Length: 214
Image 1: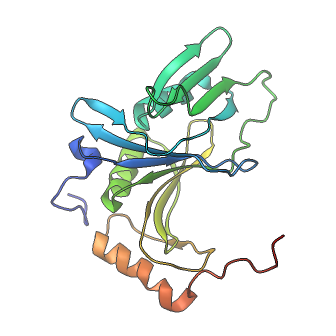
Image 2: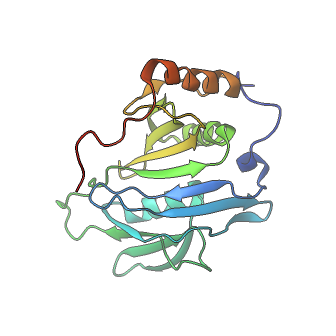
């Protein structure tokens, strides 16, 4: 058993529980809100919508591989696809939102595809970050880093197209950013949270805008 694994199973591992995961898509050029609450049940992955979300789209060289990753590993549902045209639509809650993520095959082999700064998934429990971290390792995904931002504990990794993805848990602490200190997700929740909280004293609270706005 890995050190730090809690006796209880995470909602992800048990396959049950309400409001497990909040999907937030962050694009470099369009950083607007995109929120989706998800939960897992024993009969599969189901998602309950609490906030509207606008679709995000990205071009990919390896469409099939990425569609497989986002549906099987990350738990999104393929709502529609056109293999001839090379496009796949995915949603966390197909009944409420036809698609939140559109994957499109690049029109030219030379077309740049890694133009998304990051896509982020928010989970409700710190142990779910740990559980996903182990799942990603088992799947052979390339891990970028595991860090605390004080305000969050995160694992950053790369999808099959080398787009960076973050999966994170939000802590209750208010800490000045930017901050990113390496953590070992196989330590206990109490240790991780205590380390995150320690930056309240060393970093202080958020500063707000540093120049007049408007």
